[in-house]
Length: 188
Image (cartoon, rainbow, N blue to C red; front, side, top):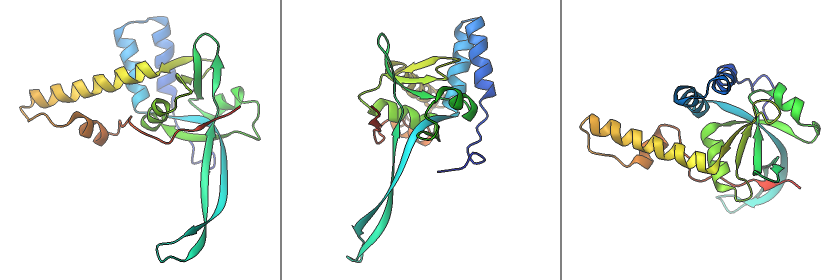
């Protein structure tokens, strides 16, 4: 696990944009929040475990290998469902997470967070700073964002006179891959 020096992410522009959107909700402020979110990273509370397992190597010899796995915190709201709580900085995570000896901050990019959210059946989305900004991104919102990105890529290619390329391949090259990721195990 990376130490706190390696986990520095500056999300001040995103937090400021969320505050501006809350003051004056319109297409422009909403789009700014979405665009900043697409290119940022978050911290997600995780229980990280490492097991030393016996595996067969390529040379057919047995050897020990470390295998790391993570379980991510899930929060529930009876009316709105289950969400991964994510945080704009470690301090915000520290305010929310009570079991600090159990959960550690794991840095995650938006594309990886979106993929993990889409592929985890027991969650309905993720929630940015649940105790402060409390901004949800539902699975439907993620699907809409992905669709919009694909449409923009197709329009850009059409305007450039290029043959339309596979939008999924272009989306993946641009770093916005929201297809599959290993699903975390739900914390009880």
